[in-house]
Image (cartoon, rainbow, N blue to C red):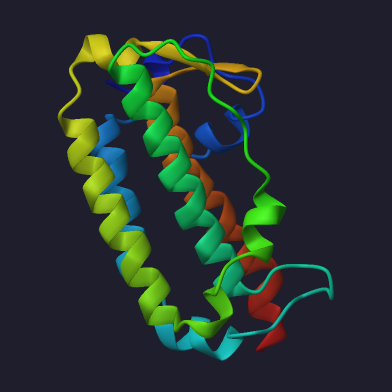
Length: 173
């Protein structure tokens, strides 16, 4: 199924979903994995603990945030795909960011984790049929389909890699 099959488009998360091309969900996962392989790890390592503003996250914090968020959304997708109608809670991304060891890890370690996680979630989404992809559930105050969650995971990565490119790359040049 494609991004254009998402109905209704969930408010707030559309900002991430709309960053992804209107392609099949598994193709979108494949492209996101390719994007991870294309990251210039040496450049990311040069950014290491830099922040573009004192209160902002480091690149390592951002990668950890992408990992944490993907794990939470993958869990939601699985619950909804299995027709679990339990209202799922939100999460505080800033609290998560304050309680990690991301800055003690290497860029390579973080990128390896997000890549392995993305591959595992691609396999999970491959196991869902169209009926499962269209199932919905509520997380916090938002109704979302499994399909929307998949595209959100991918768009969230695109969003944060763009932030790194726009706001962190100038710190090295």
